[in-house]
Image (cartoon, rainbow over all chains, first blue to last red; front, top):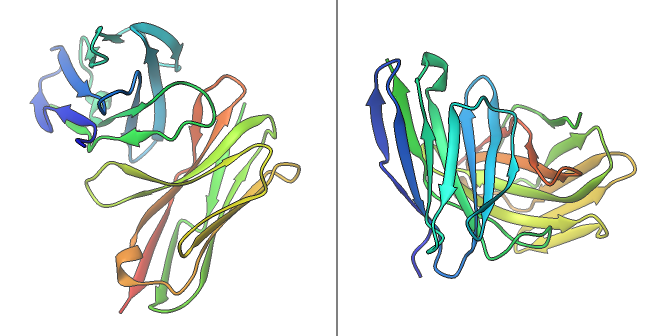
Length: 114
Length: 111
């Protein structure tokens, strides 16, 4: 079955703009989480959604937001882009929440802010 | 605050060798520990998940151990192959139900 799909794979934006990234989880998965990966900070948790509700949020400014739709697809939005937002944004899905659930990652969206 | 450390940052070994990657964490209050691999420019692939009540997990040539009391985990790779070359990351699911990540170990297996 299809894995986690993220779009777009690559994008370039200008400082001050906003961006929306999309994630389609594995069919049947209801939990979606987002992560930011940079060379300096490594992988950091952004937020997690389950059944359209944000269950958890990492330590990121309010410019970072997300949502989940009834079909479990998720989007994340970054407003007023800064150079430091340049990163690989990874989406992951799992069947449910809970420590026993394996998470599956998409290939990520590479964002460059110039 | 939970911190996860992986040593070494990089490792290069000849094909066929057995090797151990290390992961340490500062707070033993974790739900689980997971090992992932990441190939260049790609997402992450889950390798092994160890629940907090477990001591080890095995999958093929991979074996991961967990010692919560000492805050340590090891990933043992037997009979390494060039295809094992990747960055290996460990992550702990902390008491806030967030995955806290190590910086990874970049592994190169020389043919």
